[in-house]
Length: 425
Image 1 (cartoon, helix red, strand yellow):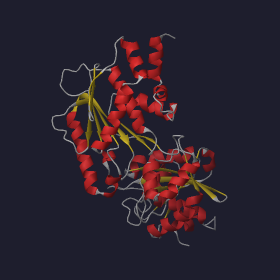
Image 2 (cartoon, rainbow, N blue to C red):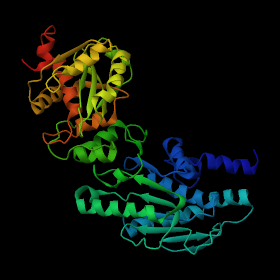
Image 3 (cartoon, rainbow, N blue to C red):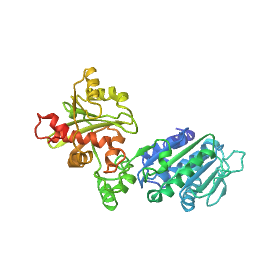
């Protein structure tokens, strides 16, 4: 392998650059993957990962690689405060001055990499070929002025933080800044976002759907680490910062994280349930379930659509998992949905729901929660609705369907199915 091939190999495996820089905790997965994606993306991109996962460290390498790969583009880097920005700009300067980055650049171009200008908020190198007068790398705190600024690559890092969690005004300010970035992005440019969610209505709701890496899947935290952190903070804060999901801050019924299983045959010969939406903002929720001993094995899907639009998908899922019959509530439609299901050759049983929804969820689903395992592939939104559920929750279709399934399997008289589903104990 010659020198050029070696340089190209390092760029293709950028975690090795991190190791040479002294970032020995970086890994091929996920860090190498993150860096490659953030350097090569041609579209707006959002990466969410748990706190302490070295996102910002990876960004320093990403910025340096952008500088040596394409000097025609300028970069604006945005963090919450000016002090936060200065820390990263200083780190990027150190990376650009490192032997490994200089060697890669010289090997590929036959030129020396030189820093022409460096301040607490700006860096320009001799790789920069853009005719405009802006700095090659410009750091801005979220309170700084964006007027007159333009960039080919805009990177936001942790612009959402604890202030956004506790202050609606701060959330709105952050959102306004993010929306302004669309106006300063040059034609053909990209916006890269990295960070950790703090609130259900924070600026991440405006960004492209994120790639998410929670504490269970980066391999960077042991079970003991996770449990220690869980004990050190509130359930809602731990869920947002380490599991990348939102739960209600107060009055949450479900705080223990869900457990997942892989083998779909555990659901064979179970039953299915549809909580139907007939318009508006309601969701259609679909649940399959099977009890084995003291455990409930469940699978959930959810769509913010009229039941007619997703019924065939529900029935296909029930058939795939060999769960029958399909139970449906008859209160709203007087048995119409059950009739439609039967027309498709699937056994359906309708039942009248007589139990208060909150009581049903807080009784049956809460009772079973720690003994439920979820089939992998269950919709994230389905689980999120359950974790967010309180008596005043805006949406409760997933916990309602899951609680009906729990009530069914909780019933002592296995023959009296209508009693089990209808809540007429």
